[in-house]
Length: 162
Image: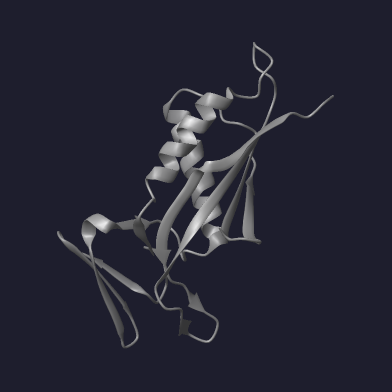
């Protein structure tokens, strides 16, 4: 029996965002940004019109997910050491003696341990699945997200049913 999948990628699935991560040994990167490029692959059975999913519908959904992160500071809310303190107008981040303060409207508080490209790919996969479900699509058996943070440097996250 054949396996089917569809893939979307391209210049309309790019977002610009700032982040920093904590490295081994308690080293904290400086705040910096990337133009992240997203590729999405959905695998599953064919529907009544012999498609895994309509390309246009998938592209529109993924563009909306990517737009949520565009031109923002990405901050992890589940890091065990880094403190993210959310106020009405500001977000304060503390790590050891370092402290950053950002306008609240320019931050995206993400339910991740770190904003590594690997965990961000997983976050995008989960947001895609949530959005598909909210719009009445059947959960695909396989979702693969490739996230590139700079040319030649990318990570892939593949999710399958629980």
